[in-house]
Length: 197
Image (cartoon, rainbow, N blue to C red; front, side):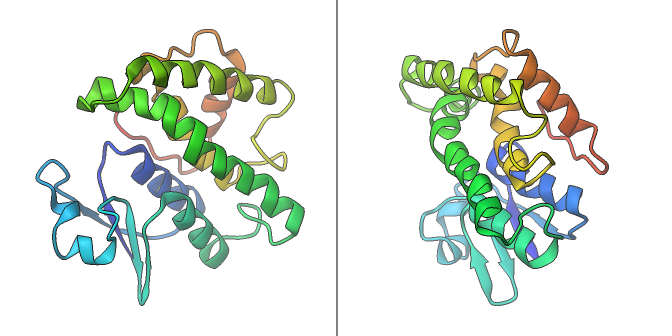
């Protein structure tokens, strides 16, 4: 099973992190992102969106980090990471949606501006960060984990770009519950770090 990967990508990292935590073996293939390899054959044939990560597992090819997390958890991990009951799945999927929307367009986008020079409205990304971080902070005031009272793929999905938020100018100093949650994830067996985390 192969993951086409960029070490500094939070979306790629969330897949590597979950695989490490769940003991799922991945063959990591680094992509020359700056050279545009993700927009050229053979990768553009695997993902016409021209993005990474890309997971190839036999005949299965997946292009979205949230979808990859669901696939790996459902196929290769025990149900503690992604349960099969409707309520449990829905609790986790709502966090996958949050990371693909509010987190991606807030802290993740702010980091793209500062770290990679993307031409994105920085003020807007910080405004979005200032909305989502307090919501996560308030949720974590009453919960040790994002969903189901235990580590799940919800935590793996949200963790990277929240942990990396300071790289985009969104400080975490006012969010003690978030910082404690980040520390709990870092303390999990087989935790895998990345630059900046």
